[in-house]
Image (cartoon, rainbow, N blue to C red; front, side, top):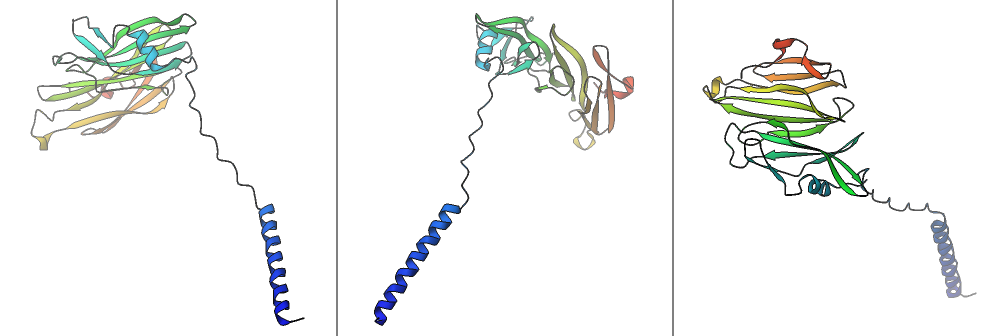
Length: 247
């Protein structure tokens, strides 16, 4: 056999062996898992949307007249699931308000059936707080107790002294009920030179559902005020000494 023929046979054998090795690798490599499907957003248990709820609660537009005659305008809010149905919560402001006029939180209890969306209870000014037509902030908490609680904070400045108060409103089957109103800020920054100003702010921490929570104050004064549930409300365990004061 010529040398050239032997080289040709060697090349053929190596090629066949290489192809077999590739087939073996391909046939035995682990399968690549298929990409995980994107999670589908969970709809509201009732299928009710925020837009539909707000149309039902404010059929003539997102506004109302206060008892004093001012125009309150409401922003998009939040639908809250409760054991007794859906509750709509919306913050409201008064454009061009006087300083003494506060903002509001509207609360509507809703029911949806084959006949549509029904407003069971309408409270456009369920919570009033703040000044100059607005509240500072609002949120819905599920940590205070078994039922959702609306946290509303509002304040203002009078003769250089600033204060802010937080109102806790529990969403009960019969309607919203105030659990507590707590002073959470005091400052004399506008009444004294800035280098002498004293400001203290409080934040709710250490919640024991349905029993107690702590308001932790920091700043010019540093202390903890424990609030305990007595009947239908929360009260400071230490009485007046556990309140901020200064307003």
